[in-house]
Image (cartoon, rainbow, N blue to C red):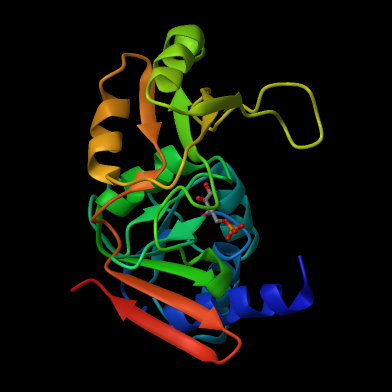
Length: 232
Ligand code: 5RP
């Protein structure tokens, strides 16, 4: 990844943090973009510019990062509603539908996003697509017992299916909820709603990485400046 892209990720994430106010319940996303938001929140809490923030992380990785920054973490048991969640994405369509999950946290990410009043996607401009499926696979989280029937079913939908492996390794990638991920490579998706509904039909599918009608905002950092898109 070039230094420029890292800088754009940071700019997008830090812009989104400007929408957080003291006293809010915040959803903390996962990935190399969202981590910049977590770090910025940590700094603002340390300096006293933000007060009384509590947060719900979308992965164990993010939980560790937040704990190292002394961001107070809570659960849905005590805080069932989230004011703002800031998270990254792998692809962002013009209508703010996104694919997520290349970082492997899509299940908790979708649960957190669905409980959020405002769900802000942060990304660099390279994530923008005209049709989902153009650049990234659709990850599908599956219980290990169901791997074969789910993989066969996803192939019947036209996907080339690859079981996700640990980075640089040969062992299967295991999610925070002890499931596997089947990455589905598809041609650009004409009808994401229809595909999402079809994927859900198969027993053993826990969740998929199509986040449709969920994002309220997208903050995209481009070489020419920040673009703030809102769902119309
Ligand atoms: C993790 C995700 C990430 O938000 C997504 O993969 C984007 O990651 P990055 O900001 O590192 O490009 O969905 O499950």
